[in-house]
Image 1 (spheres, rainbow, N blue to C red):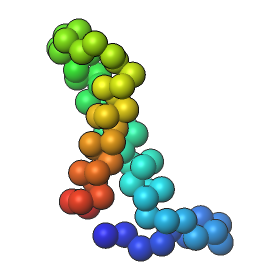
Image 2: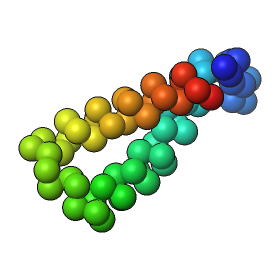
Image 3: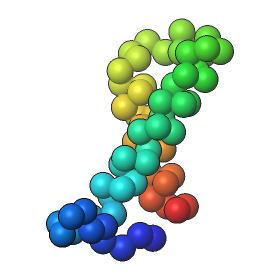
Image 4: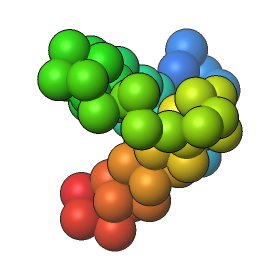
Length: 64
């Protein structure tokens, strides 16, 4: 688990680092799902993408 992150003298919580790291991972997974056609199966795209981001963020917090 990460400790506090120092950004120009301002200490940030580790969740900020995890949240920023989860964005490119989510974008990559979204790209794979759109290109493979799996996203057509979902009824509410925005809700699924928020849930996907939340799952990836939780996995990063647990395993990094």
